[in-house]
Length: 556
Image 1 (tube, rainbow, N blue to C red):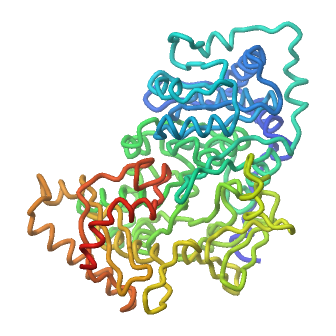
Image 2 (cartoon, rainbow, N blue to C red):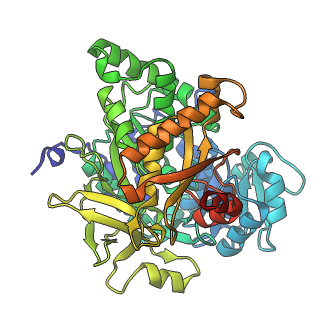
């Protein structure tokens, strides 16, 4: 047995429950005076006793609106305590609450409403115009968490509604492990989003397995800042931390405030996509900290405190490949990142690097109880109770993803070493095969480009069925402004810095992988826009279509 498997798993009695409703009731009873939820920059928040009382009241109110077991409830909210309140109340009725990405267009929101078939939407004033434009004929009630408007209800009024004969205990105890707990709508990089159906059983298995693989102690603090429609926030901040682990969840509505929130909250558990780690690294480097390994131990400790990560017991990076440069930089500061891999279809993580046995460049080993195998072409398959129930209303795509033996086909090409550590190569459908027949991973090439300079926010490698690789580069405007000031247009020093960065990236690539030409795209690529999914994955086909003329010039 390795060192990573020898740690004593913290005790979470809630994980013995068979539904998330039962888990929450155990957690709330055990930690009545601890703060359960608070908004960053807001008041003292709700204790678990207060939160449980609010859940009971809103559960009855939603029942009064006609919500029943098996129904869906739409949530279009920023990161705020009312999201958890609305979600957990719906769960206690056996309903299926799901979250809508706040960046979606009315047409996209309408697609979700049509697929889910919900009769109730809980939202806030800033999103109300889109909700009303996307509204389907099935939606009978729109509930606002921050006041009232025409043709809406106030959340506090719904929670104050009493229903004759309603039995709260009977309602949540009637919920079963295989009931669908939520719908996670996939990012849709190549087509319309699919509705991943997760169950109480699959999510609880995820929480149990993760608590065995990494030390998540009862209590502690976590910042909820990723969109709640993202499986990472849903599984870690909401289901795991709030309902099962008894953590104080601090909601952060504005991602730009994350550095300040980290310093104030000082979380004990923190996970981020690689872009967040890259931004934190760029901020430290702009302050003069180029090589943390040269700092004395006291200096490293001071930096960790200033970052707000000095009390963090677990640091996770996931959702996209993390560069060795970023991993090494934080490791030198005494902040070891545990890289993991998973999917919405897997209730979040399926693999994680165990603390004490981290191997950079891998996404770790399978969580306890998770089976992995590779097909002949290298595609990674997963079988475990954390696998989704299927895609809602889509038997065809469910059959493509789940085979008859219960294996989920991930679509990722991977390698597994003799010790069980997994290396993700790239998405199966995104591999580049150039005109000479050479297979390449664009994600690996793009990772090298981003790691070469904090000036590069996003990079897209193009080369499929072409003689050589080219790249589109999007600049990080904050870093450009700090380093060069003003507009980057016609800035010779900036051009030289980018040329040096591309040259440095090419040094770490084979000759056939190297970028021969590149062009800077003068635009900001925002999550949920034409180029990026809400979780900041590249939309490759839309990008190549939108920038076809630029790409043609690079090959001209």
